[in-house]
Image (cartoon, rainbow, N blue to C red; front, side):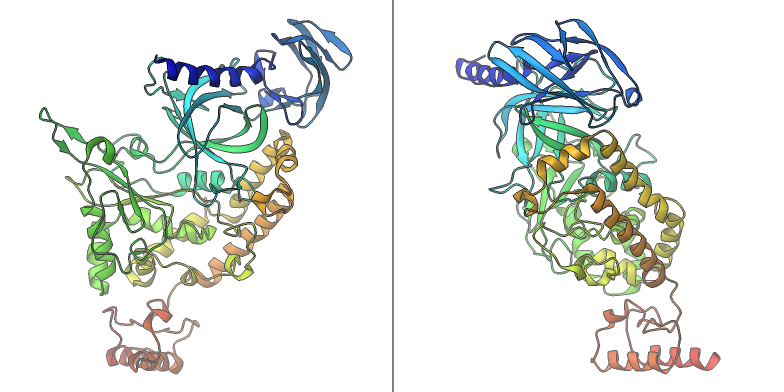
Length: 575
């Protein structure tokens, strides 16, 4: 190892060990010291809560001896922690070579993650320790870490998101690790839920998507395809300071979606197969309504190529996405949409995505925060999609200092905010709408059942409260500028979310996902002269046909003319 690199790593190691040395070992579980509150936080199995815990307590320098509730302990002594419960504190006085630490021990059943190092917008080396409640005493793992995010990663933010890439400390090559029974990989995300007043919207919504969405079209022939991000709620300390609850999750990448890897031949020529793109900002190209004609190398007006990495192979592929976007922009008849939509897009996944974001009113996932993937464009160019970063949903505003009730109302109609052309077309074309309606009704019996949906969030919040993590999160972040100085109260926010969900699902049932009656242009449930008047307004140019969500195209030819008027009159006369 070069001298400069060695000194850098040594500095990180000394920083990590400064807090590491003040940790305790309680019954084989690591308990790091939260230096903000002088509290040792120990992750143990949930099954141990509600009873007494007899455990051996061990420690090393600089701690010399320990008093727990007036009982003096030497390293290796046993102690009985009576009545373990979330938030309960056991008074502690630790004698160290530098003086006394007066604090407490408390227990959680969430994993505890410690970050040690100095991090910013670029990757820097550090250590990450992941203490799982059912695992043995955790040791620090070498990694490079950086801040991540868009609006959540600007000057003045405090509860940062992190991207972690674990490395072999000897040669800094990739080092895979498995956590929480999820995948064995070197790349992990710590999502702070920074602007989410419930803190769990992204995690629970991601789990809902994984449960309800149909697999990508190629999943029947390729094993273990996963079109979403799994994760686990954890508690995080940064250089010994408590940072609160996080969602530690897998990223969306080639390995999750089983995208075919590129080939390199013996002459170093690259052949691309699978591609992964991400829409990360709203543009007319991203919503597929008026795309830019020319692409860049790694970006195209709001789209970014995530795989393959151009800096590795100096090759790129846009054609599959480009053609799909231009098809969506140019398809101007029902027949074109019916015959070709499923050629360009993974239609079952597109249907589920539309229902998913409409049900949650996921305002930041309608055009942006979407991954698009082609498994191997040399075999099939059909594009599937995956949502990401689902915290702006279920009545959550874009920012803590924003308060626009109409924008987040559970009674808001989808056409008021969905501009993504393939999804809007799918909603307006009769053939697709009938399939969409059937799928929605099936999901209402299962994953989108109102009580089931509420219980997903209630259960997750109950876990945070009963483990003590909710109170620690509220104490750490309530009133912080990250949330515009507002109170953070997970119980109050959960009541709001439950009311929002119940109103939203009732509204969708009554006004959005409803059978369409032939000839009912204005959508009032009846076919009469008012519908004829609507058609005449469209023909004369007084009204845009899109106002009627496809109902104006009575003859299904995607044109509004006198033939549609005659059809409606025939329906009236027959009734």
